[in-house]
Length: 103
Image 1 (cartoon, rainbow, N blue to C red):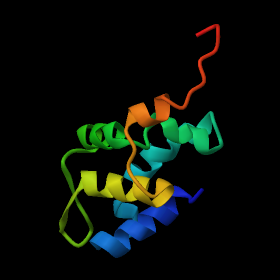
Image 2 (image 1 turned 60 degrees about the vertical axis):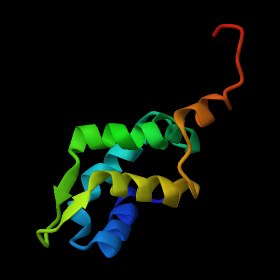
Image 3 (image 1 turned 180 degrees about the horizontal axis):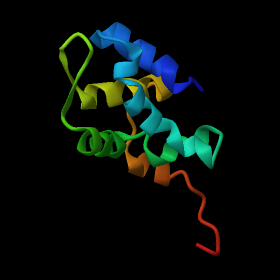
Image 4 (image 1 turned 90 degrees about the vertical axis):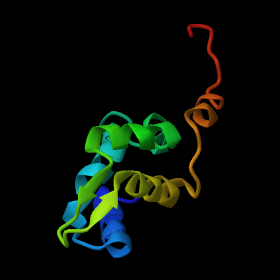
């Protein structure tokens, strides 16, 4: 798993500015690693709905250090695609959960 700073560096290359311009967004996608430190943490935000939630939290655009407006959705899409290779839906993740009797 790539560190959020690595994703932020990738954003800076793609959209301009400095990695710090994008770090909060990439930290948000990966903060669930605090309680589940493997790939399963991605079930919470690494999907289309998570990208739209990110946009609601951070706004439609951010202005990077070069003064350029960048769509937050594009940054979220970049993060998820770099981690997973595509953008799944939340349903894609949830359908993979094996139901247990207690559920």
